[in-house]
Length: 143
Image (cartoon, rainbow, N blue to C red; front, side):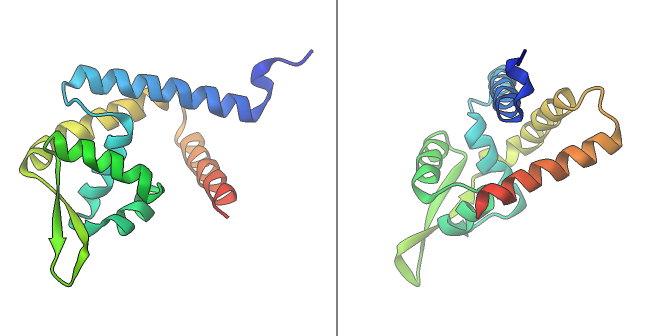
């Protein structure tokens, strides 16, 4: 008899639902007032700040329209700013504010706690394999 979690598609979807809920709970407890989607954007900006929305879109694997909403909310919360690009009046750069820089260590700590919980009980070899499989899934659905 088939069980619902016999399906890799359903298992992955349900795991992501649990991961999302846990991430949201951890962010709520941190007092940062960030959503999981905003967390992804900030994480990317911590790696490379002062970039165009197109560059950021590629970095976070989101389309510009989805990303614009996240940036709007991050800007309203004081984590990022849009700066006009002198060479092109139609475009702008996304930069981290002092608030975001001041909360960077807390944000990264929350992310580490989430990752530790997610991978609890896994060996280093399993973690390497899991990362490889997730990367392969992204590649398979990206083309």
